[in-house]
Image 1 (cartoon, rainbow, N blue to C red):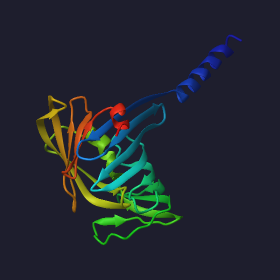
Image 2: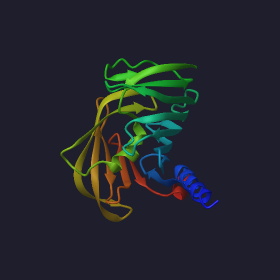
Image 3: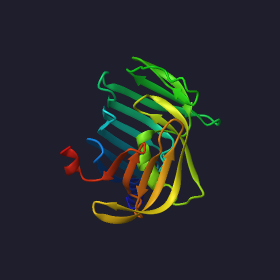
Length: 253
């Protein structure tokens, strides 16, 4: 019996360690004086002895150039850098004149040539994009296996990715952007660090780190991050300014 007890205790500890995990969760709310609505970004980090994952849940309820966006986006990532998602789920309205868009994409493999293969289930198709730098993956009420460039991330995931980038003007973050509202991939996107800047937010001057996102065929977007690596303010398409706010304020809009 004395010999069995240590063995049982050891097995118990091993099982406990195996299934133990640490979960960290944070959600940010952003509102704008330039347009109606809000954007929220929730990040959930789950870490156990065998698997690490980051889940980003983004909600967009805002109007851009008289176009109402009302959708939820969920992305599961296997690394903290969030540049190689494993699963993408989208559900919502991207245009007042069409039915809600729904699709789920799951990465099934990645090869050595920086290409990922995905299976998609969806119910939306629209006009094709002719620009060779835009790789469209269109589907309509059926499942498809698609080949898309590696390092392709949903555009709104930048709100969580940029705060973790180095505060260094020498480096450039390169990626491909999945435009959730048009369902195509915009290749050769870049984010660069521009240095410190001082801006006035809610009547208070803050010293923040500034980044710029640029890509072909789009106006630049700017992101301001504090020392705690929190995204404080975003200027989308050089036009729509969103500032960190609260759930209470967002829900009133």
